[in-house]
Structure formats: structure tokens, C-alpha cells
Length: 185
Image (tube, rainbow, N blue to C red; front, side, top):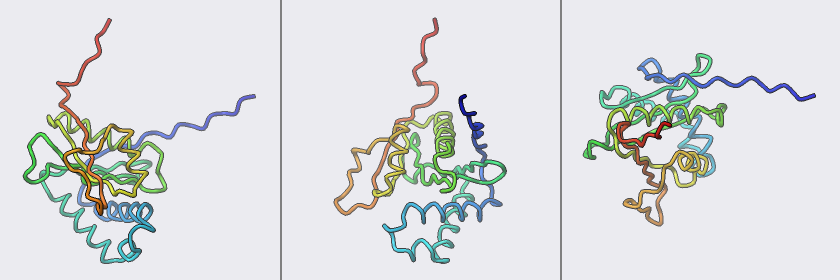
């Protein structure tokens, strides 16, 4: 007799973040960073209240910027993921930079990062973005594999130096109207 299948975990709800989310976003970011940077970055940078405050200020600036998009992924009423992007100052208008994408470590491999990424890409296409950029920590193999699965590739125009801590990645996006459509039969 076959075993019953566990119920499918419903996908997260993606919404725009508000200033009321600031502490939840900061805590999630702090937990995620501590999980994937532990052993590579001094613990003081991961655990100090001053470091948390620095990230809280950064997220506060992102939430206050009218040109930034900050998204929250929710499941069962709890914020379980966050993403932030905007046009980089001085960059071409058809490019965007993904500054942050974090999933609460207790929810890794649950489709949350993919749902956030899919929402970002849909927003970029609707805004006519041709190219997205991001920087990923060189030793964060989990994140690098995630981005590779989603079509990101090393940016050949930004080759890392031998002592680089981050790798620049690029994703050709193209606006929705320029995407190839499958012929219907």
C-alpha cells in the first residue's frame, strides 16, 4: 500500500514591505547572514548589536527610498523572505541591481527564494529592464547555486580580482514584450 503524500506546502504570498516590517526584516537578514557567513566572517560582525543596527539603518534607507522596491514573502502570516532592488546610481536606466535576497534559514528549500526571484523578474520585465546585476559572496555556494539555477551568470565585464570577496553576476531580463512567444497550433 503506497504511503500518503504529505500535503503540498502552499507558496508564499509576496507583498511590498512597509516601514512596519523593518525589525522583522532586520532580524531575518541577521539570521540568514549568520547562517551562511559563520566561519567565513568574524563572529563579531555577525552577532554584535552594532552590526544589527547598521543593517537596520540600511533596510530603513531602502524602505524610505521612493526608487527602491522591497518585497516580503509571507507564509502563515510570518515574514519568511525579503528582497530589495533598485536602479544603481549612475547606471543605465534599463538596468537594475538586486541588492538583497534572503530567506529565513528555517524555511530554506521551501520555494520562497524562487517566489521572490520570480516576482522581482516579473517587476523588472514590466518596468522594461533589460539587465539585472547582483553581487554574491564568493564562498556562499548555496546562493551561487540558487542564482545559477535561475539563469544568472558571471558578469564578464566585472572580473573578480584575486582577493575579491564577491562575484558579480548578470541576468539578461528583457521586457515582457520582447520575450519570445511560443507559436500556438
